[in-house]
Length: 575
Image (cartoon, rainbow, N blue to C red; front, top):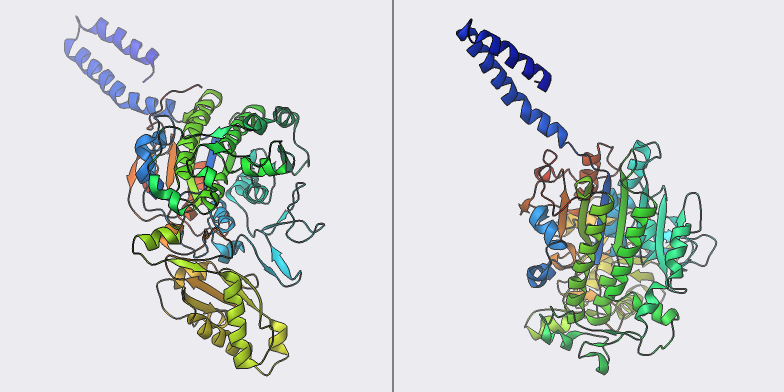
């Protein structure tokens, strides 16, 4: 009941009190009841805040174990804010077998696995080009080249950002950001609204959009500040909240003797700001802060969250994987990176609150994949683990095939987990391809560190043998891009030809389980222990924004964490 109507009822009631007391009481009771019924409805309507900006934050490599050792050190306005006031899914796990960055970034934004997206690895073998390629290619450059000018995407299907672009008739702004070119362009989707990435050759951000191949003026101003160069010659000192893995230095593969104390100059072998310095800068917490500062400028200068339709900002943080490969995923550096990242997120959230209002944002944090503990660490604790040299594996397998089938180059490429047979050699032999595949799988099983090998013929005939990894491997197999054989290592083993012994991409929980935190006015806070997957992110975003899900999406809407607007508590609200 409106205030005007309430006043009219009270006036009539007061006039009737002396003349007809009983009628006055009835009218007064009706007035109170209407006021009691309607007030909550009005209050709910007043707090009916719609999401104006989706902020998707992806740490490239972030094992859930980091929460065990670091969560109690998070500050209130960083990750702790998402954990305490948002939805914390503690059993989030990718349901594909190839848990590599490119595969899983594609899954996050499409809700689909490699069987739908076609992204079967960080790279895969292209028989036409006879070389390895990545999801972002440039037809005018040598295969596999990293071109700062951008490139085209081999991702199949639309992303949730693409669907938002369609639903808003092109009015929504979709922006992606990373220090890695491939990440930024992959997350940008097909629409390529705006993508920014760090060019380690020049120490500046470059970008690409549908309308321009150059960065806008505000980005040029950011570049003119030469952000990274303020750290030239400075030491990476512990933040004071680390030393949770003081013994982890033993298993840090690429540390020099001068770096084992943790407190050293990142560019000790380079005294000038050159490509070597810019490359090493990416494996520092300052690279994360740089991305946050650039993201704040994006929100301000592109007016994200200030339009009639929702906008979307996706930020990938590759430094986690770079630090993990350089120092080890369980090193003091890795944990210090997590704690400093927490500080950077607090800075970002404060800026979002001032510019957009956190009550108008849907913030999502997850990771591209987890990380296996170094084989040396597992072995020291009496656990099984080891390295399988990818080049040696290929050579040994090819030698075994030659002894059985005749001398030839039977294997064309091995880019774990995909092994590509030399189809030309098979065509010129007296052997059928299914028979060669079967023999290769049998010989491969005898090599230490190999758990299972699946063949293309088995997939084609739907004759894949039963086993715990069958479903996840099916989701990761794409006909024509995957190899004739899909090789799964044993738990604790990794395929790598690199000296660091650090690799990802297995179907096991240490690679597949990642954090998932959702925070916003339409998110019901709490800890959720039920099984979920990052493929649920895109459908949930689509549901919150009331748009169509990406076409190949396999995930579901996380209904258990959705609630009526206005329920989430915020530290403060700027708008």
